[in-house]
Amino acid sequence: MTDLPLTPENGWNSLYIAGDWTDAGDRDAISDENPYTREEIATVPAGTEDDVDAAYEAAAEAQEEWAAQPPQARAGVISAAIQFLSDNREEIAELLTVESGSTQVKCGAEIQTARGMMQQAASYPFRMDGQHSDSITQGKENIAERVPVGVVGVISPWNFPLHLSMRAVAPAIAAGNGVVLKPASSTPITGGLLLARIFEAAGAPEGIINVVTGRGSDIGDAVAGHGTPRVLAFTGSTEIGQRVAEKAASNCALPALELGGNNVHVVTENADLDRAVDGGTFGSFLHQGQICISINRHLVHEDVYDDYVDALADRAASLPKGDPRDEDTVVGPIIDESQRDQIVDYIEESVDQGATVAAGGDHDDLVVEATVLADADNDMAAACNEHFGPVAPVIPYSSDEEAIELANDTIHGLSGSVHSEDMEQARNIADAIETGMIHINDQPVNDEPHVPFGGMKQSGMGRYNGDQILEEVTTTKWISVQHEPREYPF
Image (cartoon, rainbow, N blue to C red; front, side):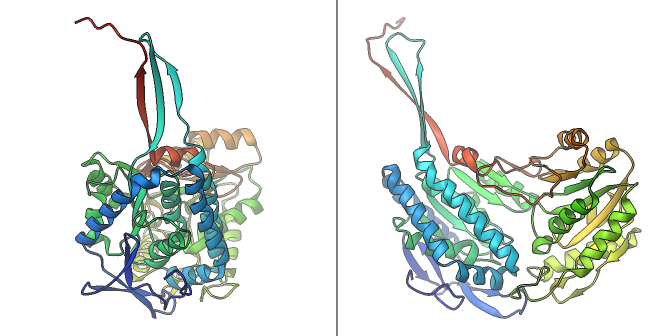
């Protein structure tokens, strides 16, 4: 498998368990389709609960010996995986385009971010520090070691499949864990089987990474509720994340969750309007808005509201749409019909509620136009729900206090942005918005491999990136040594 070209036609009709590519056999097949052309690009096996059991067993068996390897050995595998990613960048970008509808700009950003996550992970084997503490007992030595948790389960989404799988898989492997990965059924290659190819080529021992493709409705509970993993990393909707957390917690496994968002882009009366529109365009329409940290609501001060709507609508109308293989395309296809239908329903319902379509509003098959909704309010369908599409509801406000109240009027708290040339105003608003991440004079779609990433409220639990993800996939172990005889009271 390692020597096969990374094309949709080559070698994906298998599971990867214990270092073996297991053919589909009598399992059901899942059709993997190009969302733009609607052509089948591959079929993958619909994994079973027995496959999940076998994958976790393989990960547990391989993990202890892997954890005992010196840090340079584990770091070396991650470094080799980075090299494989770099050497095959064009082929991987093509896979992302045909499987997830990623435009060329999005492909480049995703591969770059995944690479950055892997570079951070390569340092983790050398950063698993412990501590030595004095004891309250005479003659005792206290040592706290940082050790791998054992096995990490990963359930990853379809929107940034390579990046959002790799950000959990690479740190877990680097820290000495075994991994079982279940990718989304819409992106089984770039979210799952591709990672198996990458780490196989990098020399990861058999069983350290295992990939079980399948539908969440069939094996999601088996992956999340299995008794083997000590950490279950999940990225996806809040509704499903809550179920995953319940299943994981039933076995005292730690749920590491990055869930939905309803992110605001606050444009104050003191904003540089050109910068705010630039950020608003990028933050709403990159990857068709199918990003948990994309802008869901534009909150704009009434003094600049009309000018902002006009400028944003002009920009939205000018964005090239269509085939994501074209270099100029900005707005490509939505992943599937159900997602498209939900987006279109939100637009139509918002118009029925009083919103005005300032740009877009139509669709051609799975390509939904970049849509700007003026005269919106916080209760409209496209604003109160995470629409996950190329839709920009623009909501007026009259004071900083109202902007903050509107921003916080959601169960979510993932990301956001604030534009003002008055830095004190911007910082005060940013501080008051209940969100795990917020960006001043920028937009919410930011992710840096060394900076904590995660949300508040029902947008998740835990953090990815940097020291934070290392803490998620490791635990501390207290070892004490009684060097001198100890007197006990009985």
